[in-house]
Image 1 (cartoon, rainbow, N blue to C red):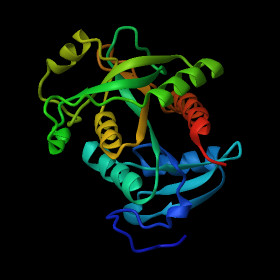
Image 2: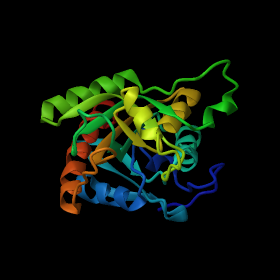
Image 3: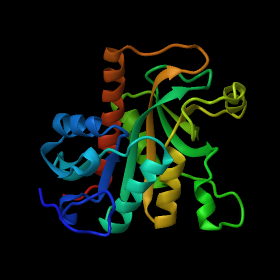
Length: 244
């Protein structure tokens, strides 16, 4: 693996080693698992700060996968560097989320059309109003079609991107539910804003691993099966936009 000097703070790699589309789990070890399980001939392109990144092929087309870390500050740092310095055009977040809606069940795949948030990240843009973070429509449409094709139960709608994992406001969950928010997580809004500001494309896919109101949660084995369904949907979606 080539380690090169670059304007990037946290990625040191040959740009030719990174595909135009990147799958983006929070955990870098999950990125390693994805590469070793689903990609052919994966090559590691980044080890800086142990935020592992790999590129391989899926059904003959190049796809990369790289960890993003937890929360908007970390995820947008890596998204910005991939977009600005490495020629990446599309990012698909693949992560877990807590269900909120009554009709959101464990193992469901939530595809985030947009994300409400308590983050102030977008203030930097000086936008004269509230800038709504939203998914790329073409990728969203491809993901819905992929889920239907392979029989994955997918819900499309709004999620909530939280700036904190432990929320001292015990009324927050009920407010999210009242506005028909499907799930809560910590990265989607930032990734969408970063893609919009960079004139690039992003989509977030979330596997429901627990439910905020019912208290239900998946076992480790069940989480793995749920993750597999999300990954198959994400890979089929990425394939539509990947290069040979």
